[in-house]
Image (tube, rainbow over all chains, first blue to last red):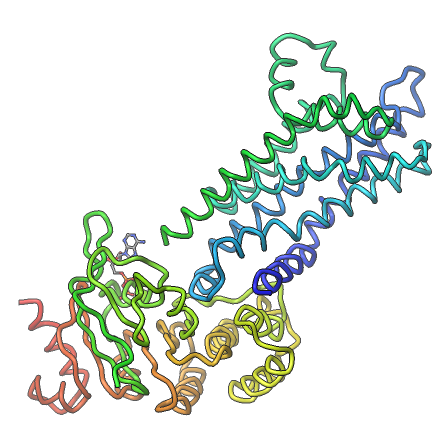
Length: 243
Length: 242
Ligand SMILES: Nc1ncnc2c1ncn2[C@@H]1O[C@H](COP(=O)(O)OP(=O)(O)O)[C@@H](O)[C@H]1O
Ligand SMILES: [Mg+2]
């Protein structure tokens, strides 16, 4: 009850920020349209919609990190959180209250991306449902990463690190824009050690109904999700105590 | 009956002692002011009493419960208006009030009843639907204090409630605070002498983390050998410096 009250407040706070909506929803959609427009005008297969869309949905999740990090950092800089720390809300209430509302937003964003890709030629199948659900572990990773950044950084730093750095990182290392096999070497090794590429491969596989391939990529994504969540909880509770 | 008691309460930040062996006794229904210049340790004291910061040493009992051992129980009894205005900017005033009611587990009916009562008390009707972040500083502060009161606290903490308000808004807020007197225990901090004088049952004068003197305005005046509270305050603070 207490937790849900706080979660409701966080949902409102995010959804009422027009910038959040513009970036979170607008940016992935613009990319989707732009890249398919490019594809329509070149003879080689660069951004085939059936491969592009799963990648874009993962890329879009990096905005969830920005949302949660901004919210937490803003709250920490205002006296609101101080006030709430003097109420019966517990550490768990805060953490779940911050993380839970963003999950439906992430799912909503994914669904909208897939729906928008249908008129662009995306193959329609029941696998889209699996792909939407399959986004959850990576979404948890992204949201927890936001909680972590928001607990450690100020509002301005969050904008730079989560806004610019992370979105680029997830874009370049996800294999959406170019085939990482072609680049190879060190770059590919890094990409393999991070969750972005695995999440994209998992999404593509789910979308194609290749469940065995999807399963082979889920472990790193889950591991990053769990470990990041644990570190985020630790850091949030620490800053809560250090008032 | 005693509502707040601190025993040798200490808070140290690295090399500065913000609060130094504070011993306070505040009775039920009393309006007690902590008066002192900036940096005297008022906010730090409030932060410890409201379980926001852990004391370095000593303990305090709020409503009979220890702030170090039973913070959960303490938090259920208190309402806090922090020194800085604390509202959720993207929520309407009504939603801000509902948020606090929800956190305290109030039913729908009770929430409605409390919001009606508080908006009458603070004349919030005209701003109830507006976003809190879009209001003027004075209005935000009113909302911030209403949020501290809506949970029907037994003990209310007001940290510099009229900081940054104009004269009219200050006097309006004083009137609201006066209507609460005697019903609940109020601990207020201020660096305005006239504010402490106008509102308090008793005043504690703080400097550099220490409590220099405690008493009613008359008692403090007598102690300093004057009939003007400002003169009394200055002489007590200066004497304490010796
Ligand atoms: N978080 C903190 N870290 C370090 N020093 C602090 C902190 N909070 C307060 N202080 C110091 O403690 C002293 C008392 O501050 P404060 O309680 O805010 O005084 P007041 O509210 O009376 O103006 C000041 O010297 C202030 O600089
Ligand atoms: Mg202060």
